[in-house]
Image (tube, rainbow, N blue to C red; front, side, top):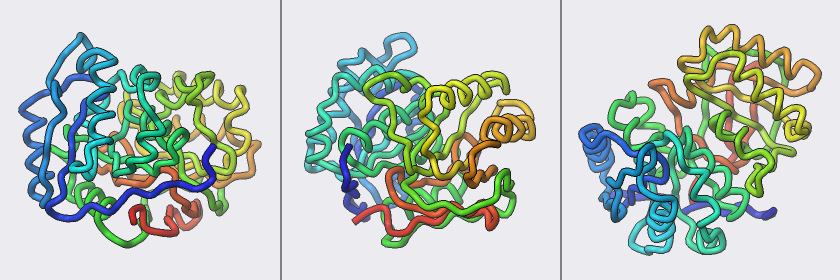
Length: 302
């Protein structure tokens, strides 16, 4: 495991952002709406070759999707990379990627949901700080707050601060550590693979969509039984859209983490909700579940 994280270079107006599709295919009309949002922010946009390929529930073969991603990291004219959408398939491209090359060509990489497999693994294997934030598809309908947070994360020289007045203190406390995580289902599926995330000393952020309460219970229980949660110092819960009543999710989390003396904060505006604030995974932050805030210590870019 790398000891010194690599922060990508800050994006400025006029920079080129490349769009890749490492997971599922997508609706083209909504895609172009999301592209216009990026252009309105002042960025140029290029597409990966074969971006619109379809292979069932995948945006092309595993090799095809890995090649477009690898090429964009190695293209010096492209300053940042954003994913078209999540869905499924990111985990399947991991064996094809050259992580040393990605480490040698660091740049802003943005996405969420199924893209968690890449966000997490890029930090683990390449030491690259990545961005849990919108995809092109969600940018198309994102709230102004989400769009502003995305631009601030990748372009502003100021630490990110997330304070939520509607947050829920599930376990009181304060913790400091590098922030990791993302989509719960995707993280759970990385267990037992060479790409299982390192969670010791970390603040874990999780979110999900379309999973029933018992499935969330099962995934968190599996992670706890595996021992991978033993060393986390804090837990933040993003949105759980379509997962039933949020009170039930919170009860499940409290039942699983009751014997761990860590702060647990619910209600972070991160994930599949209309408001999806961008956060840097791999960066150091303080989680205060009483003040209901997640404060990063330094800018996410250099």
